[in-house]
Length: 288
Image (cartoon, rainbow, N blue to C red; front, side):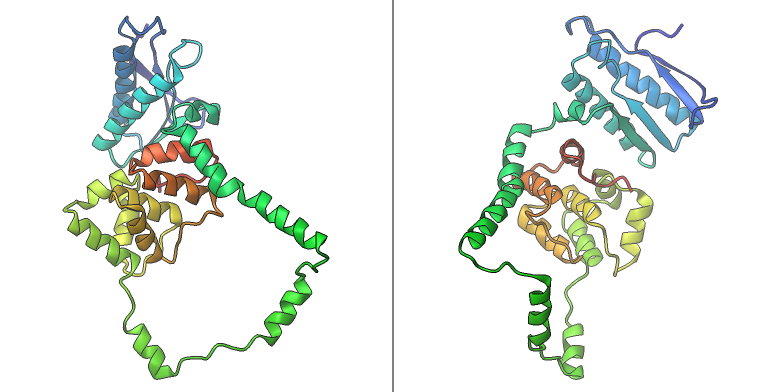
């Protein structure tokens, strides 16, 4: 059989994968019997098998955290560290941690208590305010805005003056640097390599090459935020970079509020921010 802390591979047979890596994790016995070293060895053996087979993607569970009793928070710390080490050595592999519940990840999210309060204050509290305001208007007998009224106002609103063609040409000739141009300038300014940035941002080399080669590239917000984190920008700097792509952070979006929370606290680890986003059922950063 396979000893604890090791892994072996079999074909995927009828499963939707080419191979299955069978890893034998340790049973938790209090933490003083080498469980952490065995769990690390387990992940390393499994990832080593994936590398040997030339796998382009890997899905792995939180080993030993179920019936084997390994504390979830500590098991996730080991999984995160070993997955990061594997991806540092094999940056083109897509690695996905598979869990049965968001609560598993939420238990170990950095600053989760503060984050929940911040989200409640910045995002959830907006809805009761709007409802209270509507009740106030109804009590005063004030008519609520209607779609028809909106159309009428729009119809009678004066048109903005249109710039003359020479004025428009002048404005277009003084456009700010694009997102791609600003990004590359920031990378050079910080003395970083492309590989360092796209790995930190959890992006593929192919996507980063597209960003570098196209001055007019328009990223999605998760991609732009991932790059801002990879560059370790402050919140104002991140806002400025996002604005280059026509993007902004808003308190009307839970995703934006979570990103703002970590930027305000100088947390630039994409994995840590992704764990928080996952716990709140929001889009993840990078992995494109």
